[in-house]
Length: 631
Image 1 (tube, rainbow, N blue to C red):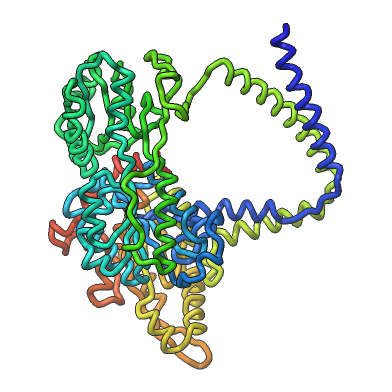
Image 2: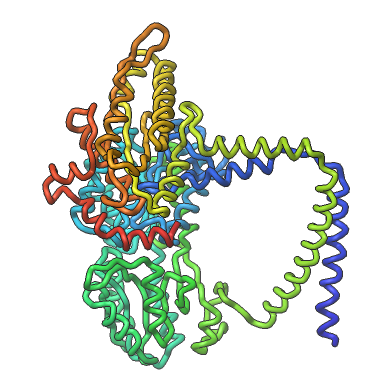
């Protein structure tokens, strides 16, 4: 009874105190503003990123015309960044895809460390799925074309080993004279080589030795280690690190399970046959001997569902990892962002020493600790626990739940009472403002066409509806010359007139048109009729520009180049579709302009070695699964 009274007392006090404070708040006169509508628009526009191959996103939550981003508000004061150029632009080059949780943590940290005035562009090597020499060559060509056209960057941040290796390989071509900051590097030799090339940054958390030591103390009777790796750059680096530590742990043997050499069933059989004599480490698992690609979550699930012993790893997730010492990727990203800020402010790279060990944290799953008999007293002080259902915390959650439910009830009652006193006029004004903000978030102000965010949503809707369509991407040939010759007001007029013509075409042709930004446009046309061929769609776009644009007594000739692809014949995933159309467009731009080209025709005129995207299209089912999971 005494324990019950101790629980009831704080609950009663919390409810009464909360009710009084809420009553005082709601009885005060409060102004009605458009804040709610504005916050909705901001939240919606955040989703405009993470599209196409580059995965660009808007850090502040508001899309820019170029699809890049600016750092978040939680950044150094403007006075600290007074020496930075207004055109400063940072490229974050990640080894993996945005599906990787550590990549998202790195991006969050980088945004926090950089100034809010600095634009950030994001590119993803995605080496878990695309790691051949051809893939790398294509990615290089893509970066070179894209950024030499839109303007090179002021600084590069390379995330993890594959990205740094890419930067080192092209240090004197694509990245010549560009400052480089790296983070999350597991290979000591690669970090030292980067430092010798006037780069700086933060090496990985150096957690292998500490994880071996911790796991050994938790499993004292085990006779050997089994380390799960693969043939990627990261997997090879992990294997080298473990081998270097063999002499320190010579009382146990070191064995490696290379997933790239075994079938999925062989991997499952090996893991399921392990006993308490073995300490199991999960480090990297991106593919099996058949060449099938696995996301990090898929790989973790395969291992943890088949293992009957604890699984240790420097990467913790909710998929059955018992625990481990892992790199604090958010803090590491913040440190890299601060280094980048110093360099952009004028500090020479050699004056910023590299950090040879990133900050770490110990994280364990309390529910699995209980399963395998691991006590909290055997773990380091400051360990973070997930899935912790001890009675003390359960009681606290019960108290907080009851208190929150009671306060929520009071809030709902008071909110309902307050709502009855609001006038219909204010409600109508808020509705109009909300609709306007929604339109602004999805429309391009200059042309009236849908923007990149609306394009991404419409493209996904059409794919999910399994409705055949043609995707066209195109831009205005020589648009810079129009601006230089007639002035930017005339250039804006040309863009607006282009938007007007495209709107008329969309209304009459049963399609939708969009402006990506600058002079780049896209269109989606459904192919319901027999004469709605891909070539006819291209002709409709080219025909729009037969007549010049007339303004202020001047006639401005405008031409365009078009690339197209078909759903579902060419590809069934949004990123691949856009990529294929882009490839066709780039081929036209390189070979005379003023024409259109289908992806299908591009494959016919290219050599087999050039058709890197064919491989991407053939693997789109596995890539699509990763995409669906991650974003």
